[in-house]
Picture 1 (cartoon, rainbow, N blue to C red):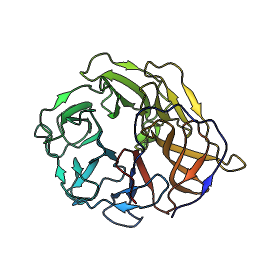
Picture 2 (tube, rainbow, N blue to C red):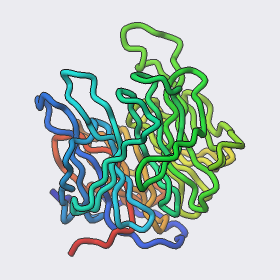
Picture 3 (cartoon, helix red, strand yellow):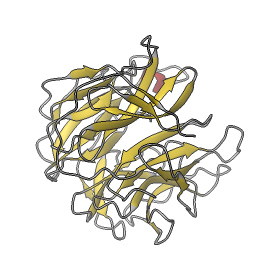
Length: 328
């Protein structure tokens, strides 16, 4: 359902090269579906022309779709192989928005039972950046790159020193660096150790050199909903705090700045996460819990002019704003 804007006046942001096309996102299957998982959709930025992307496998619950640099294909970060009666294996896939030309990537160097999720393309679309799970195999968790054509030629870029996850989320527009989330265990273990996990944003050169931490642990959200995306001009990285406030930071770690969202007429409480810039840099798309429901929203890059673009009871995540032409 398309809703009208919750409009608050605000200054427009400087534009960069890029044509604003469709948004891709994932929607979890309704509560009660025994298999779990999610479906993938595309839509225009105003919420119109929502279309499901036909896939031969369900996406993992928190899987995300990522547009290829030219907007012609979608990378699905994690697809379910197997069943919940047996430990499922996660593998990425690539598909056209209409469901054609599906390719399941089965990296030969990743053992059966160990998951791999791929969240970013290089600008030339030749390679994908992926995170190795820390369970189910003998490869240490960390960031690797693989060929986008067949999943081969695995190259290790990072190894998580805590035995937890390193999750690559984006490559810089010039292709020289990538940003990733490094998880570490929190101070409390207990029955829900993930609840105390902490995460920090790191940037590294695309060849695996020059590692640098750009936020302290505990600032960014530590969950499968966490994210970090580069601005189209390469000057900022956008993410979210543990409290659900969006922020930007420069790739060298300087200039961290909160982006308060102007929601409603009384600044209602909200929790925003998984932001992404529009291709021209003037707007952002993000997920947000508001008034007891989670949906997708857009806004100007300064947090003004918030517009709700989905209205469903199901959990939606991973919005990626690409250049694929708008549906008419």
